[in-house]
Amino acid sequence: MTDMSDAGRLTSPGAATMPATLARPDRRQLMIGGAMLAATAATVALKPRRQVERIAPGTLDRAIPTTIGRWQFVTASGLVVPPQDELTDQIYDQVLTRVYGGDGLPGIMLLIAYGSAQDYTLQAHLPEVCYPSSGYTIRGIDRIPVALHRGQREVATFLTAERSDRIEQVFYWVRIGDRFPATLGQERIAVTLANLRGVLPDGVLVRVSTLGDDRTAALVQIEQFNRSLIASLGPPGRKLLGTDI
Image 1 (cartoon, rainbow, N blue to C red):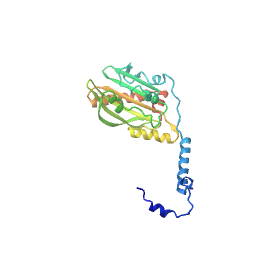
Image 2 (image 1 turned 90 degrees about the vertical axis):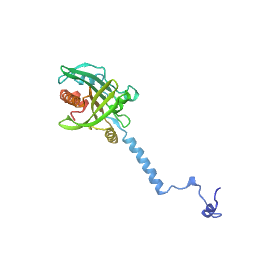
Image 3 (image 1 turned 90 degrees about the horizontal axis):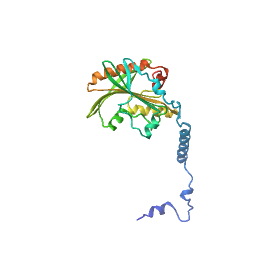
Image 4 (image 1 turned 45 degrees about the horizontal axis):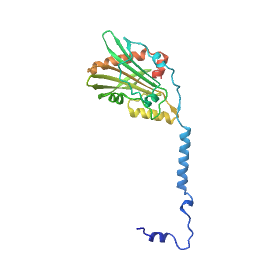
């Protein structure tokens, strides 16, 4: 039941009333409306724009040497790769997969995924996501310092991916624009900060892995391979991986 007593106190007989739809906006409403218009204008003005053009077919393949330190390219198959879906196609321009081997050396698997434009919805498929989608369990996630450019240390991730028929020791690092985020949260921050500057940054995921259950021995070999990879790059490879920043 509606209580009409309050309504009676609000108006008196014969008093002029103004329909609510015709009431003049107060100062607070005007300020809110102005702020919304300003935000809309800023959004349009700051719409992120691509800084790096898509790379030509074969660019990534040519930029990565077939000889890396004591390792030689063996095959391009046998790696766990990001799922081939529409989102993956948007994230990555090109994906390189190679297996390297050498006399008395463990086989090393290399995956490099490069994308010329990243926004907050398009972020690299990290191994913590990619491997479980292929039936692996992830354990032992560690952050490892790694020298990537001009003597500066960044942070890589080292983890074990295990399935009933396979144990893989995985080491990876990510570049977004001029930043090297160590976690998914940091990756999102790097993308968002670039987007707020009106930039769609390029990005790369570099993953080095080997089979076996000995994490300590695997990390020694992986780090040696990663150092050799960085040292072997020419200008195109340094530009793509960001090691010349």
